[in-house]
Image 1 (cartoon, rainbow, N blue to C red):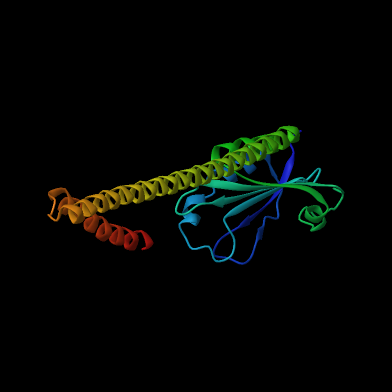
Image 2 (tube, one colour):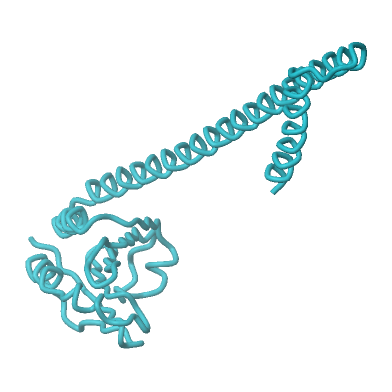
Length: 226
């Protein structure tokens, strides 16, 4: 015998939840889900609820809720699945069926949501739970991979920055050594010029080079500090 279901609907433009008075079979429940204008509602401003359908199996009060998520089109569903611990309430929408229950909440693709609903309407609750658990683990792994990638990029950035800093330090050392060499040569040829009483061409060359080095060093320090 086919199970019977109660259902309710939520709309973005209304603060009221519509609770259908009649019970329906699985075929009618599937038809309502498939014909629900998800994307039409998602194109409108959400003032109250996301467009949603809730099904409650009359026999055991197990509940599954599908809420459409997206901007102008259906991107995914948020699924909420409740297994009441005390399913003897006559009212299918009794708060105790939600509060006193095992609950799973997850976002899945529209195609995956359709399969999960089919399993629920068939009464295959083990498959529903297993699929939700699988999707939950998959999502957790994707988030873990994203975190690891972020950490890796951050580490590589730090290594790259350190490498650049090391190159700058090496460049500074090279510039300083070159300056010392130029200054030493200028000093040697300047002494030689004084001793011989005539200006040596090399003395002039290294003198100009030393002056150029000093000017360049000053400009380099100014640019680096900026």
